Image 1 (cartoon, helix red, strand yellow):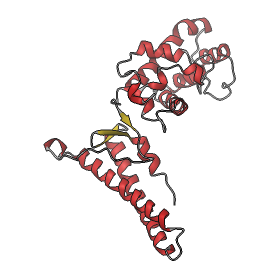
Image 2 (cartoon, rainbow, N blue to C red):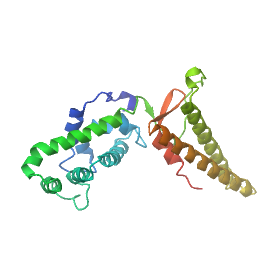
Image 3 (tube, rainbow, N blue to C red):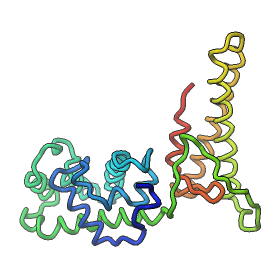
Image 4 (spheres, rainbow, N blue to C red):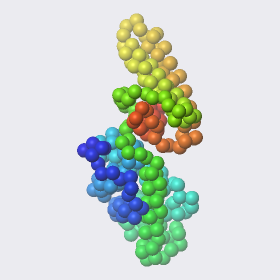
Length: 251
């Protein structure tokens, strides 16, 4: 099933998300295929982070990486630790039963375990669901992945008044160096095994490292200024995480 064939999950509410998160409690995190269900792995925010969005296991990996990061956003560290404990992410809780995890989480917050199970646990799931929903709202439909192939979109670039912004300039510079890095990598890999071209291959490798350094700085500037939203390229949208993986290259 392609990403475009999946149900639109942009308008999912916190109650439905909380219900889906409850499915993960018994076995804890990281979630397996059976526990994950079909809703959470198909959220746009998860698709955008998956290396291979059309592969369920890749989406599952993205979901299992996303949820702990969202838990870290709780301002109260004790509350955050209780949530991590409930989901089996805290130290010493991975193989603990749900009953034991509830006991430890309730103790962290100084609640009676029965009160915790009937009231506080529900509040925790709804709070986490709200974080998932807020993260989801940052992502638009038809997310495309950068950067394994960097396929051209086929769109003809336009330059209208709406593009004359600092963000659009920064995005254009990012893509300038994405393709510059790609070109230098191609040249390096094409020449490195050809006799007599070792020097040129090394020049291209060094040039790729310089492109990578500039690109990393531009992406950091973008994230600091605009956050980890989607970066447009023509009429397509690309997740920032894909570009960040690209600048992890080492020659």
